[in-house]
Image (cartoon, rainbow, N blue to C red):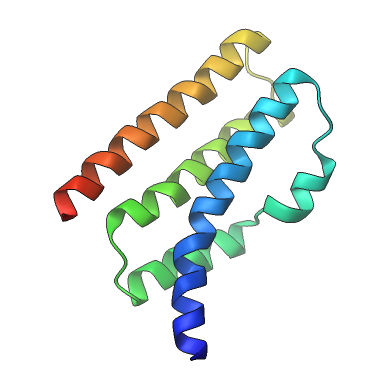
Length: 116
């Protein structure tokens, strides 16, 4: 029973993290406070490494990992912007994230349809 619960949670957590990353980006652009989101959907490198490892151990499909790839790329962009600053305005920054969301969803859809 616990193994089934673990597998179900490992399948849902990447999607939840990706959704929280997208909502965090949109809320930050709008100007709403997002401190609470860091407690719910914030991830560390070790957490992402565990989720990647677990996805390979339990032989999940690649489209499950695409959500993890999205979170890694978003965190990388946000970290670079925070520490070094990207030479783009707010509108270009949100468009970059929206483009990343769109590309990720298209790839997930293609991978999901290939599986079916």
